Image (cartoon, rainbow, N blue to C red; front, side, top):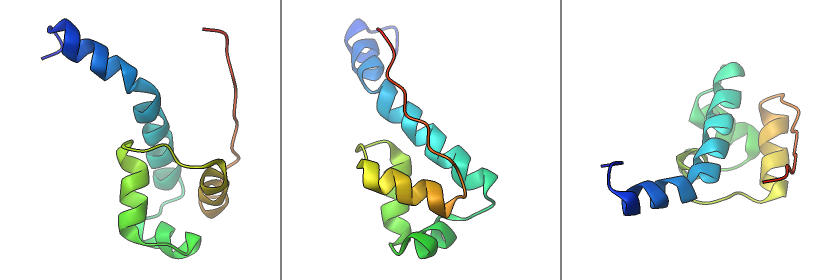
Length: 82
């Protein structure tokens, strides 16, 4: 499918969302938590965690900070030149 230029372009446009999703999943796994356990620590639902980890939507900074605290991670935000 990625041989199709239109599909490849659409996939590349979502790279940042998927990259963040991979980081969230990695933080949860490093913490040794299931989605349900993380949800309990954050005061939310397992389905909300699943949505965060899907990369379908970008979370707020407040949510990222809560996620980091719940996984005992330290958030690092960087802006780099393109």
